[in-house]
Image 1 (cartoon, rainbow, N blue to C red):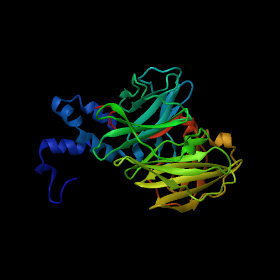
Image 2 (cartoon, one colour; image 1 turned 60 degrees about the vertical axis):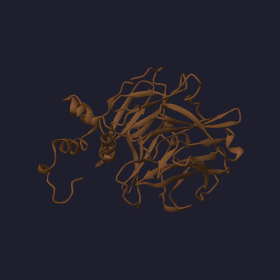
Image 3 (cartoon, rainbow, N blue to C red; image 1 turned 30 degrees about the vertical axis):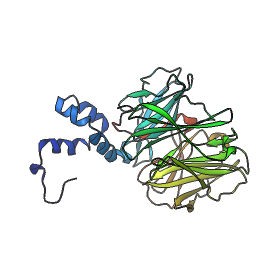
Image 4 (cartoon, one colour; image 1 turned 135 degrees about the vertical axis):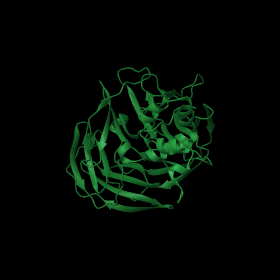
Length: 359
């Protein structure tokens, strides 16, 4: 950002190019690297990538990636009409079997994905097509659905990392992958033993305010529900209470980071779902709103379609577009946020960036 009284004419060419290109779309940055060696070097620096990423986190750069048995497609979200734009087909740059790929976590344009036929973990940027295998010969980086949990985060040194929580034969393990050093290491995790049970469902991690947050919900009516917080710099875990939602049905908590404040869409019910929006203030959850009555949706359909919330509206989406809209009295979010888990890990909302899965 230019200081007051300084014009573009007062700046060296290097700074002018930097200021301009940190504001252009990610795909244009990729093309700009071929202009000359100096531009290639400039656009490859970590400072450029970091600032470009921070300026890319706007609704116009949001995309929806959807995977089905035949195609993988990317859709822009038209913020004015709140609907999908024309899709483009994406070819996976890595080997896979019949699109059998699950999206586990996403952050700043990077997706952590699992190849379901081999259980291998990868980091992938669908905008630049770059990817990185995370699995190792000593059995790190292999993901088992319904037993493991994944979270992507950035630490104080701007190192992108993957937190992998595993449950194997009653033993819980926690491992951290560092993009900087390209290796895994084990860290301790002190928690209650019952969370090791496969009856508990762990969500993907949501990165917010220097911590990763997971919902941990017992898979039956009236079960235990908690939030587990992981401080990414101290690497310490703590347990946080769940919002005081009714326990008369199935409970699902979906966490989102809205302007660096942690929010939860807590849904409860069996045949008709009730949804409340909560925000975490210190150690307490504050209810922001209760969703107005919605048309009855079966639990199976509820888990398969995609929901978003944005400026005062709640959108229930299918792959083809909006199913219906729910008007709400809620502060402007200025971006789209998933309200339910995303089509059984078969999609993600991501932002187009040039962040690389490897150094």
